Image (tube, rainbow, N blue to C red; front, side, top):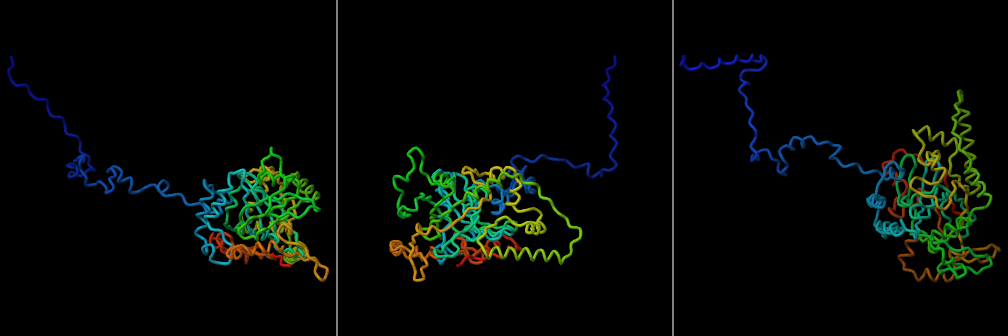
Length: 465
């Protein structure tokens, strides 16, 4: 029997060393850090595992999104949840002087916001705005927008602005129907290279006055309607329903309670049967795609002659009548296409089938039956604006303020008479008219919005006679 001690198993052969690792590096060891160690804990208490991750944060997740420009919101390229907050904050940084410190009629940002809040989203709302739009193709014109429902407004483009002289030899204005806009567009004051500057000329509320026979006694705009003129109890008497009814009779007498306009100020907007039929027929026509005619050989001399002929004709038309042709000529469209990559918003929307079918921009509702490009006529309602006719020595009729109206103006505060326009007043265009909110000119808005190299359409002249 073998009583010797059993032999141990022979040692395993040594692993072949890696020739690419230095011998001194084979002595390295890794020790797990202690859980109580605070050597590498940041001052804000963030766990150590997040220190390395925080050194190179993802810029897309941590950086705030850039604020959309007012022009992008107006054009629909950007969407905001609260239009009132967006434009109130945007315009507040451009107010030139506090309201009341200059002779220009002004509405403070707080009153501007309160006015919109009281009308937006309400069936009782009767908000209006007058925009001065200095368009690069259509030229300078003034857009009157009236609220028609909780979210939308009907719009007319008036080339020479609202009438303000009761004794003018050019009493009428052409008022061309445009697209139905969203109500929040009433807040917009901005500019872009494609659409020019858009300035709030005046804003407030409106009242629709009843139609009366020419043989009936004059109606005081400050008094209410009579019993026989009131609507039936079954129909709600809101300004929106009154505007809807007057719109379909093609005769609208409307009083504008603005910040800049005189008080009272009443205009008469009417549509003839001929213009109504022409507008409806034009709206039913299918728009054909535009064809570009490329001239292979065209001398510069003939091109210049044609341009001069067109410019001369346009000047003659503007000098002889009060035409309000908002759409641009083919020559102007070709010139505009040569400088921009795409047509501006208004002309692009003309190609959109849905917009043309409904005559309403995205988000707006055409509940009033507006038809694009119908030509209405606007004039100052002189009697309802506080004037009476009087025969002069040359047998010409002169319209003078009523005695009661003059007395009423005398009772008003001196500050109120200073901040409003007084009769007669004249709309003098982009070089003179200022915003009722910020006090800026159109050129100031272009500068503040960072628009460089804007080329306005020339040839616009105010009506001052």
